[in-house]
Image 1: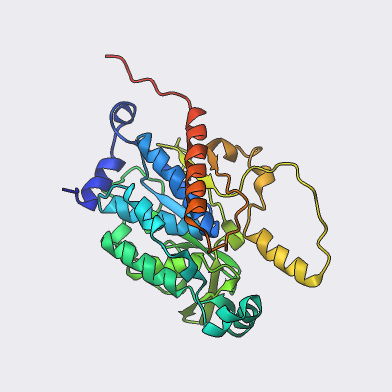
Image 2: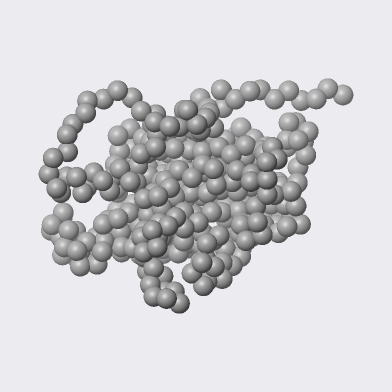
Length: 347
């Protein structure tokens, strides 16, 4: 019988360091980068960490990273085995993410372009809401209230009371030109965080500009438009870092779906359309990757080789999905091999 979510969360949060070093699961906060269909690689890395004895008190993500992060948070809250997410991701019909009117599907790129002009995005994102909403509900998670962490369960956190949730989803507000961290920033829009649906936050986070329609949020002063969080923070690795100058109780590790830079031929971008497209791609990719090493971020980051697959390649076959999953597993194993070995205390 599965333990209740509150019991599991409390047990995971209040472990002592000695317990973590022996036979208890080790806590690590996770930050998952966006990358569309390449998110399968994230799950391969996560399950490898689980097999190595880790659990995740808090998880943050952007776009595809937000999808995987929400499922991790929900499964842990409900006391479920995270390995069950493998079947969940394997049974997704990725082709339905690229939904839309029949005319757009029949006319290909031209029809999608017309839809993008008429509706601010070629695809509605409705399938994501239906599929993910149902999967979260199976784990008894609907609103952010279901993922709240009480002050009693985690008394030594440096996060403010309004930040006490096991999940943080990142979106970009192009109306206010600001990064939105959900559920933390809902009050900025006159909304009560606990009442907001988790799936709606994820839907906003994965609104790739021009590809998916943005999410419109009604406010006291008008309407705010939210799009893909990768526009402003595709890899928010510092989101859980302590702000009170105390040492961290445990690590925060990131999983990136864009590898470390390697030598490759440079090609000029000349046309106006080409510049517009590559600007959008740059904003939602690893634009800050040159600075990861000098800032020490790469020391706590798992880099997953995504095999040159595009974020919006929703026609992935079974073999390619498996290759992505395996790539995530291999990346996590290499990362763990570099970690210092913990020696249990002697009696």
